[in-house]
Image 1 (cartoon, one colour):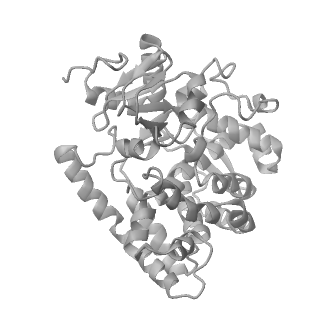
Image 2: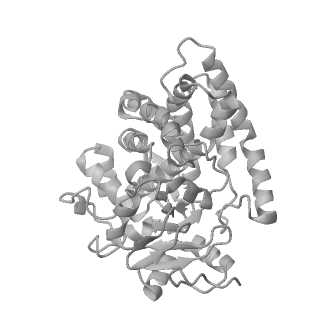
Image 3: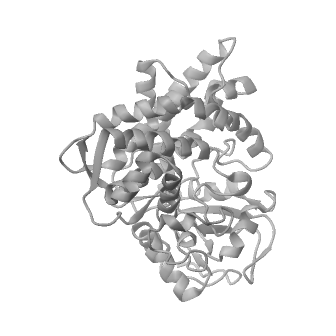
Length: 424
């Protein structure tokens, strides 16, 4: 076992593989146990991402997330957890490349582009819900993932031809599919044999989607007006081949679709658990927003936000060296009793008088790296959820929402949200 770096805060002493398995099987319990033993700042080591300094002090969240991008780098930190991400993409790049990669996406995913498509979102969601199994338990998460993939392909990439859209949805789901929830971080370069295997597997998985995206980009380039969607914006920006656009978009597609699908699943799971939540979500009024916020507080779709320090930094009384990756664990911060009273309870009413800028509520991140797809996710909550609930009544199999497990860099329901649907 490697000797711990004396410059880093103490943390669990188990081997990297043991820590990885524990975190993936029970992220909230594992992090809480480490915090109780080692304090608000501690170090963990994962099988393919080590070491990580965990910071759980609410007051440190915004300073770190709003820090100068040159001093606290998100792109290289993210590639620690997902090394297959392109350093040219908005997800994996750092300044100034990040700004250049993000700019074409902001307009295509902003309110002006998304809001006019809300009726289409509702129509597609209702069609999917009508085809879900009825009268027997089924796994809600994979069904919602497929819905989220089609919404993204048709309404964001604007691939409207039925055959090409179906092929893109299938290719996207194939790229993201993993059997079960393996308790292992994503391997990449520098991880020896595991990294080589992971690289080959990813290349094989994304090849069909890369070809489709590159071909669609080529078609758009031949048009006088390539459109105002994501692909059209990237084509208009120029300087990229179809293969280059595909390379930039691969992880962006995953990051835009996978967390959104998980968040949508959790909101529907809450409707299946609570008739009051179901009624609020079906109405789509202010109380629905409170239900969504409280659901994402208790069950955020992402494990953490990350920053790699470019220079030594004082964090909660610890002098952290340059190069260390700081991890802000979202599920732990969202349940911190210093920020949220009765933190494990589902209480949508807490948001009635809450200051939206108070407390570490970061389901979409914060600062310059705030999720570029946030508005799209909110459109899903506002349009897809009422449409689904108008078509089917959902009832959960279990008495409580399923515990979180880690899948890659996301947090998913342990049994994929087992649910029973009946037609209204």
